[in-house]
Image (cartoon, rainbow, N blue to C red; front, side, top):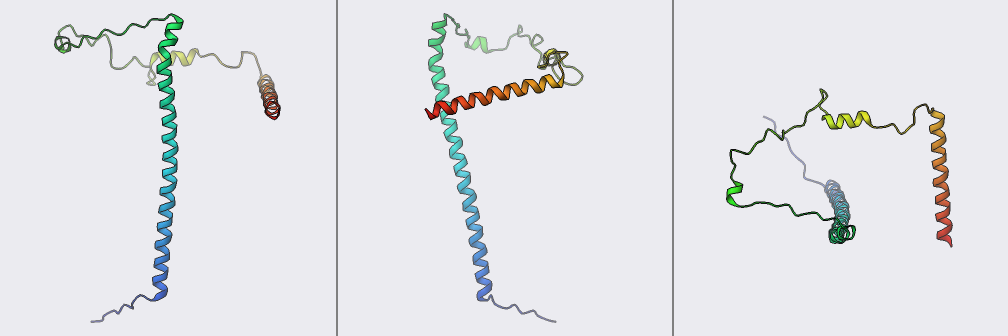
Length: 153
């Protein structure tokens, strides 16, 4: 029977192990730091959106009053008798799934996709489209130049 002998860890091997552990710890710290920065940005964005929604919710009644629109509050009967399902509760009128085409697209969506007008008028060629794109680019360049001159003033 033969036995294997294992040499003790030398100084160089220990240094390599410590360097590898240090690199791993630094990599983990960098990843966690970046994750926290991203999470903070998302939190800031969510706070801004929440503030915007609160502002809109605050301004909506004044806007409705200004426009003369009255939205009645829904009348909800939350009595125990109303909560019990009765014989007159029909579910046939409201199917769980809308009628679909063989492709699985609901009929209303399918019809809207078919009837959607093309952004290119009939009879126009690719040259017309390229001319329109060039005109849009020229208008955008003009707007950008105007904005730069206004900022410089």
